[in-house]
Image (cartoon, rainbow, N blue to C red; front, side, top):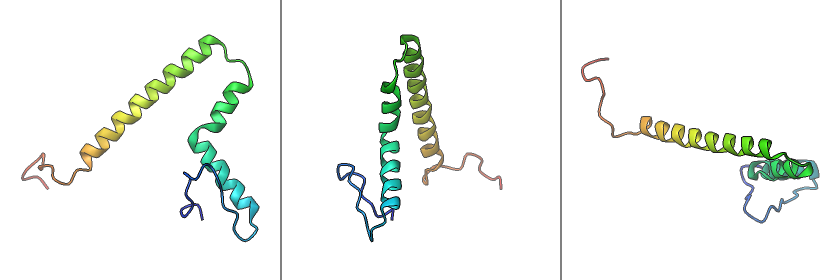
Length: 89
């Protein structure tokens, strides 16, 4: 059911056959993926400025790393690249 669900419909989850537990799990997954729970946990308590700076710097570094790793994976997965070691098996 989660593969057939459309997460872009304003965070609305369809309850099918009265199965509320599964719909709640799907909603939690959608909210977690969008970062709503993280934002809620951050705003529940005061975050010291030093902790906020550390968190923001960590998130920036993580985003840069993920972008770089995705770019490298796309480079490796290309189909039309030449053989780097011709003649080797």
